[in-house]
Image 1 (cartoon, rainbow, N blue to C red):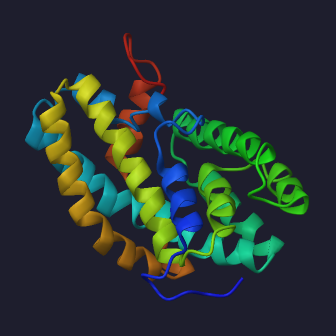
Image 2 (cartoon, rainbow, N blue to C red):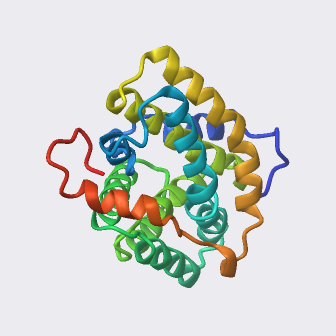
Length: 233
């Protein structure tokens, strides 16, 4: 598939990326807070400013160095039909989920996106079979869906990051709780930070990719046994 210069994404590809970023995509992203609910329960996040700071830190320290960096490599790997590279990246994602619920999240969303792909013309049967054999993680399934577009890798990452941001803002609105206007202000802050986070993710080599966020892992483990909760992670 020919590479395109930024700013020349065909309408069909742009719409596909918007579809993949939509909270309405039936993969269950709205079911997860990725540790935020535990942070609220332990009184670490109680206000709009604290929620914004938490999510901005998660974007910079976790997403940009982990999932987005994986996605930056996985989209070209799918386009090149590099099965070994795809399998290695998927293994890295699964091995670096630091709690049971975080691993269950990426596996469930990966399986759900795989089923969505089975019912669309986005991926070839060979690609579907390869993904199905992997115990697919969500980043690798998303990379397959995005790789079928003509969009540059950077735009694929923008779609992934914005979808994550919308789901997390909704989690903050429900769990802190916050009003819709507060949620929109947080989303504005995240969208302003996403482009630079993506530029860093695009430049991360394999040896520098990481998912080291110890407090997030601790809170996620605590959330697994939290007495009352709204979210699955």
